[in-house]
Length: 484
Length: 95
Image (cartoon, rainbow over all chains, first blue to last red; front, side, top):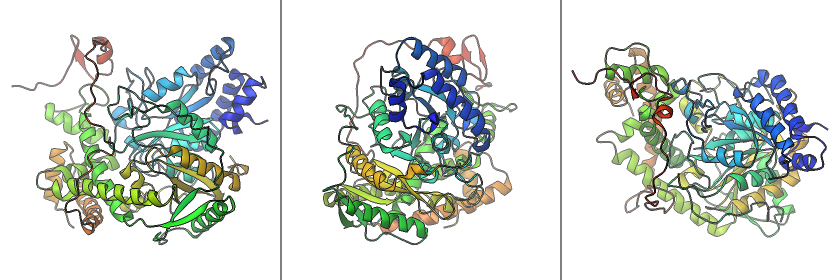
C-alpha cells in the first residue's frame, strides 16, 4: 500500500485498523517530501521533526481516533499565521516574521491533533496566478515540471497533488484556491465569505479573502470544511450560524439536481479540451439524473474589472502597515524616517505587489474615488443580483475553473493583464462572496489536469459538494497520477 | 487610457514607494493598460445602484467589555527590527 496516495478518510480507516501508526504515517510523508520536494519546490519551511514528535505523542496517548483529522498530516499556505513558526507570505517584507499568535484555522486543526508538516509557497501576499511571484522560489507543477502550478496557493495545490500532504489549506481572493487546484488535479474548495474565520490570515483584500481546502477528493473537502468552519469572535466578519456536518448529504447523487450552465459562455480563449470536459460533465450530470438548465451571466469582463479595483484598493490600504517599524524587513540605510519608509517598502515588496499597491492607491486617490472604487462596489451589487437570479433557476452552476490547463513557467510574467485574465471564471465568485469548488475531471493531450468548477448560492456548500461528489464518481480522476 | 509619468510619481509618493525612471515608465504603461480594461465598468448602468460595502449583512459586531490578556511587552517587541528600553526604535521624527 502506498500510504501517501490515500485520502483522509482512507488514511483514517487504515489508522483505525492499526495498519500503520501515526508515527509511521508521518515518517512516510517526511520521506516523500525529502524525495519529491526538491523537484517541485512547494515547501518554504518543513516542520518534520516537530511533526514526528506530534505523531509519536498521538500514538502514545492513544489519540489516533480522537477526531477524524487526528494524526492526519497537512500543509499550510504561508500566509496563515502559526504561533512561534515563521510565516512569510512569501515576501521579503516578512522574511523573518515569527507570529506571536495563531490563525483560528490553525488552532482548530491543532486542537483536532492534525499534524502540520510545514508551510508552503505562494505568490507574494497571495497576489498572482502562478506562484511565480514568490520572493523565495518558483514552485513547479508535478504533472509537468516546466509548467506553473497556478496560484496564488500553488504550494498547497502541489503538496496535495504530489502526495506530500494528505490535505492543505490555502486562501482564495479571486481564485487562488480553485485555479491551482484545477491546474494540479486536486479538489479545491472556497467556502462562502465569512464561513471560515480570517483571523490570522495575512490580509490581501479583506472583503474578498477566504480560507479554504485542498484535498484528494470531495469527501475530504467536506471533512476539512467541517473542521475549519465556524464562528470566531476574533473575526468581526465571521458568520455566527449553527455548525453543519457537510458529509451527511454528500453522497445523495445528482438525481433531481438542477445544474446551471452558461448560455452566453464565452468560448473565446477557452481551450478545446476544456470545452470537451464541460460537455462530458454535462453528459455525466444528465446520466446521473440531474436536470441541465441554461442560465445567463453577463458580467465576466466587468467582474474582473471590479475585482482589480476593489482588491487593489483594499490591498493598498492593508499593506500600508508594512513600514519597517514593528516587524518584518527594514532597509539597512536611510537618511530619516520618511526615507526609511520609502526604502523599506521599495526593497521589501516585489514588483507585482507594488503594481497592485499603485493601482489601488490611484483608484482611492482624490478625484478618482467615484470613478473607480465606488463604481466597482456598485458593479459588485449588480453581480450579486445576477447570481441571485441564476440561483432562482438552478441549484448549482457549472463552469470551467480555468480557461486553459497549466501554462509554461515564464509565459505570462511580462503581461500582467494576460495573467489577470486567467482568473476570469473564478473572480466573479469572490465578488459575490459565494462558495465554489473545483474538481479534476481528466487530462488534456499534454497530460495536464482539467478542472470543472461548481458554484452555489451563499452558504450552498452542501449542494456544491453533493454535485461535485456525483461528478467525481463519473470521472474517477484519481486513477491518474503524476510521475515524479 | 494613458497615465503620465508625473501621475505615477505622484501616486508613488502617496504609497511610499520609489521607482527609477525606467520603472516609472513601465509602471505608467502597465497601469494604463489595466485601467483601459477597468473602463469596461462603465458599460454597466449603475444609476440608483447601492454599492456593496460588504457581501454579508453583518452590522457592527460588539463583544462584552471583558479584560483579556494582552501580549507582553517582550512578545510584542520580539519581531521589532530595532528596539530600546522596551520600545520600538525608529529614526528621529521631530527635529
